[in-house]
Amino acid sequence: MTQEGWPTRKIALALYPFAAGAMATNVFFASLIGTWVGLPVVSTGWSIVFGAIIGVPATWAFARHIRTLMDRSQT
Image (cartoon, rainbow, N blue to C red; front, side, top):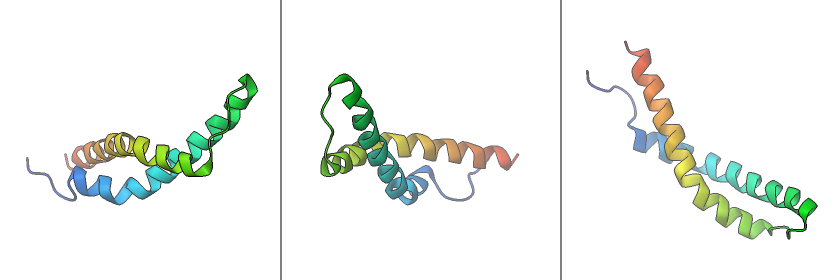
């Protein structure tokens, strides 16, 4: 069976800005929770950097999931 629609790479590129933003928000809020045990708060700049890094594998995993759902819907 041939795949129809976007390949995983194209889906990941389209979703990456949203995933990087979500990961940056998660990093920042996790650092706020970390203050309960004495850890420092991560600055917003570092949160964006960490979010951009963590966003790559998260986006790839989600894009593969979406591609799998697209393939299943064709059968």
